[in-house]
Length: 109
Image (cartoon, rainbow, N blue to C red; front, side, top):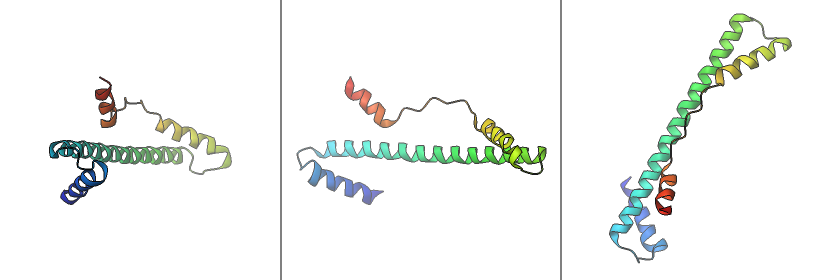
């Protein structure tokens, strides 16, 4: 991560900020980027966990269907779909506020 920080600092210093801000301000911007990247990584990990959980729910619904109806026929597809849909219905959790939303609120103050 150290080399990524150096690249970011160099780009901020030369290309974007044109050396018009202090070293302390550049470090502050880099810390914002680190926090944003950490939030992105956490969100990706959360979504991957959710995908695994949904996959397990679908597998469970299919197993449940096969225990009830050993053979899948055209007439029983609706039953399978209902079981899968029922397994995917979950309570919606409140979305966690992202770093970007927090910064927008802070700027509006």
